[in-house]
Length: 573
Image 1 (cartoon, rainbow, N blue to C red):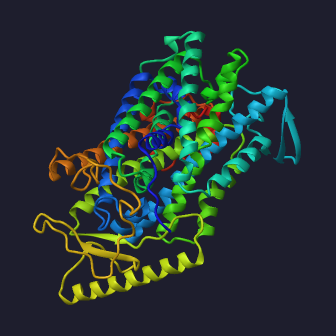
Image 2: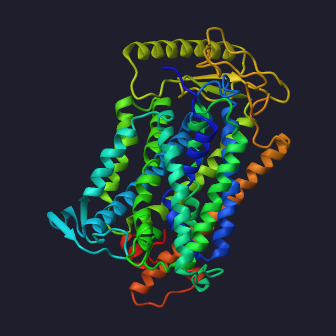
Image 3: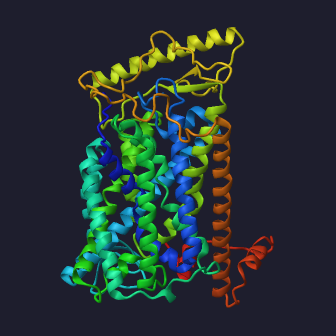
């Protein structure tokens, strides 16, 4: 099928900003209040800079694939991982990728379903659900708890009407393609701006209490705070899919920098002002507070509309990106790809509906997956691609919902022809004692070419019979007079054009080291909180964080990590 490039500059801005904001936006108030404004703001802006550089390095790595120097073809995130990493490394990245994006989707589903249940309760005075455990039957409630996110509490497993309604609306949209979702993304972006403006007015009307917002509180919830802030930058892996479908007049540098800057300012504003407007005990998030009867009626209505207008439109986007990567890497066929990308997150959300399990997902997925996948791996891909003597172009397949048999047969024939050409080229190279830039022993669908090096500045031409998957400008599209065909630069994209290659390498290493230290610190405090929680439950006075870590290192001491401990301590999202 033809690859459409229809995402405009404004749609690109809306799409990326919607990907940056999401479930983490309503959790920033808790992060600021329980961690302190100084460490939270420092980490927020530092993570924003790291995310901007990591996204840029990822885009530059895409241009290292022959036939995609100016984004003429299609290169997805997992295709780069498969080409640049050994088999075991690719499998690790693949697992992290699926886990991270699926977790993001589950978080949005839970937040949306729980808030929709609160909306039904507010309108009708009662909301019911089908209880599955510990008893089976219909359960109804007439008032909402302010301490947990679910109106049904955290002691039962259930499926609610809000969950079913969201599934009916969202699942079919997940089978669309990315460009088909742009109208929904634009509408969601406008709704986000309106809702945040009204929420801030409500904050100031309530009155701000600076004593609610400490400068620093590293001994109380710091690990969970850091985790939830890092979770906000889980969008980097979605950037290649946007680049593959953006229009030629969309400038990558400006779009990335403007969207990340806007999203970071939104996070800081909501975190600081919201933390001074409310107190957040036991992990209750911002939407729970905005839905209280003491708030304006319009605020309560908009709080209920936040998930369906802002969070729900992001669910199919992440599903589409997972499907693109599964199909591009030939992991499975279209049916199984749709089941994994679209249906699986809803099944997981169904199992985690009760209580504050959303907070646990946000905290630990942020700590364990966001940093490696969105910061470390993109920088590593960049470094490997620049040092390699050759780069790889994998045969691409169509990523639409379903192709006709004729298109599928044509794609299979083209793939077989490219595969045979690659084998012939590799045999010629092996007979001459040459080596390519990537291992193809286990990647039979790859075509490896020699890339530009300092000794050989011009890449060798592709073998005969190779055809680019798509041209940047279709025949029916005309380039406007005076408009560059490649607006970012005449040369391939560079994230730091003012720096030399060695300096860019240094920046990539700085990002890797700095973000790794931040993530290790976050895990340090998170484990310390678990230890203090266990000691408190056992009747032992909680030790300082450092002492708690030292005790944990004692082999004779067992440290148990479970959701009961987290929810009892109050997991902060």
